[in-house]
Image 1 (cartoon, rainbow, N blue to C red):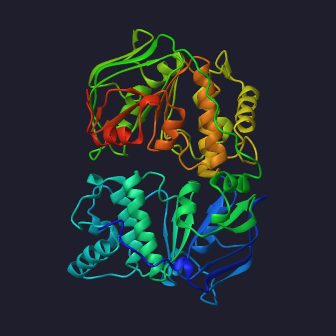
Image 2 (tube, rainbow, N blue to C red):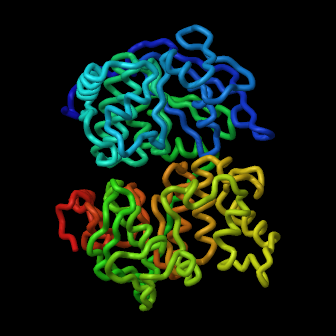
Image 3 (cartoon, rainbow, N blue to C red):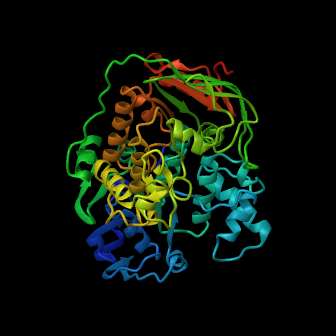
Length: 514
């Protein structure tokens, strides 16, 4: 597949609406998620749906996909009334959706994952042949016999897309499709989407990466507070202007002061950590130092040992071999609770279920994680007023959109839950902070706020380790950079002296490793 293959740009030719949404309104209890939404996507158009976290994007696409029923309003598909009863009904009518979080079974093959997700049944040999042919045709080559757990994140996304394409969708909804992809995978995905559009498939594209939106989409519908504030030509706006349109105010760039680093806070010596996931990547012979006030960025494609490094540093698992030192003291065998008592805080990639209990109130999530460090108990008695106060502080300072401190974690949008978890950890004044994917799934305004908060924390003397696949993020906040590839870590380099090419080489394993 050549990424430079010329394609017909469907955006330049006249088209007609494939789907139109008019007056869609949806309440959840007392919360207005969508208010009189109007949206149209033309045949063969890649149309962006933009908005800050909690703006109503997810609710709207769930209505289109049949997961949620609107309270009022109507939809038309190819000019006919469209009221999907459920996702199966939506797919039957030509609506496909690729979610941000994949629905795949690691232990099954590509073929098995695709087969169990299809509404119709096919003869096995015929389906395998169709998978090979269709995936190759759209620049998404797949081997039906490969085990999913052995594939990269980009290859797993191909499975989700191909599964949709096998059902001949008229409209393909893509929710944050590039959030976990490397630059090459993004390029390949864009090739596929442009090819689909050139053939007449409509695409509704949700993303917080506005530079990508400008490259891919001609038109965008912008939501704010559950309402449409504009449907615009993306080429008439810069990325910062689009971000301002989303949030209703300008976004301040991050500010970094010239700070001096302190003594070594974190030191790893010949660290080995086995993966609990049979398809995971064990980390091997890691040697690393992070000083007070320093932000170390750890880059790499997902599946190269990021989760394993996180569990080792947070204390969820003890290392198989090697040492972890915190301010000169060996904490290798100290558990997560013991490390938090020392001032070592962490925010894992999986927020819902790992960093926060879905069914518990926000104040209860604060209580179970901060009871000792924030002194939320006295003589063994829970001080609920203190827990409520701290929760309100997190909500206010990090602009978490929620009804109250009593809202359960699962009721928050992904981006707002992200802000809540990050805020909870940062407000504990950690001496060492480890974060995996700090701005994954959050809008531009929230991402800028979180990054500035991390920089401010470092300037107070805290040592910070950021594990991220977002190179722009790492370049913006990191003082030094290292890459994790195949469970091994490269020699850290000052970020100020690195070029994109150097970072690419480090992430590919082309530079020196411990």
